[in-house]
Image (cartoon, rainbow over all chains, first blue to last red; front, side, top):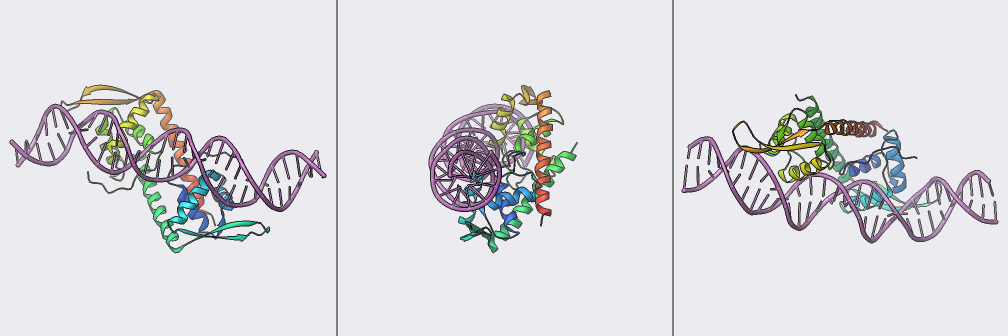
Length: 110
Length: 110
DNA sequence: TTAGAATGCCTACCCATTCTAGGCATGGCC
DNA sequence: GGCCATGCCTAGAATGGGTAGGCATTCTAA
């Protein structure tokens, strides 16, 4: 997983994490890989960004976490999207869409 | 100009300012209004965000400024996009497009 | 067998940018 | 005269992502 991507914009990471978890519970390290794959290898999330973000997101009640073992038998902390998190994802996606639309309008403007 | 919009994402403001100025030189207060209009009244830029951003952008050589009088005879500081600023706008638009594309990929992913 | 890469978690600190909340001056309009 | 719009600016807070570490375990290749 080599790095070939630009930095994220501040404010997009939560949405990406929630989106990744909407496909099923996953541990932190796996979230990074899932975002990488889902985005066609365009989005790289750094561990130093992810773990604080997961903490933040859990505090807000959008995910819950539990230690478990993964398929290879290693201990890992699995995060699950909560109902509230699913709603939040919708909110953030809608807000993202509005911004993308607004910027598109700017592009068209003469 | 009532406020009916979400906050910008950190990192998008420069692009918006440069884009607004790509339609012609303008003073600060006018940039806010032009962004508001170009975006179909979706994007509100606060003065407290704009003026520091303009200072930053001028330091980087992307705009130049000069005091002048506007059409109503008031003194105002007019900003003009430089060659370097025009290039920067292209860079930021391309990077924006990449991010939008990557997020779209995330949306499609199963 | 042993070194290093990959997997997995975490923290402290830095840094950039945006917002809030003010201040100030001028001009137009009721 | 008073108020709103126009026009510029600043200080400080808050946010959140990045850099750069640390640590433990497991797998793989030399």
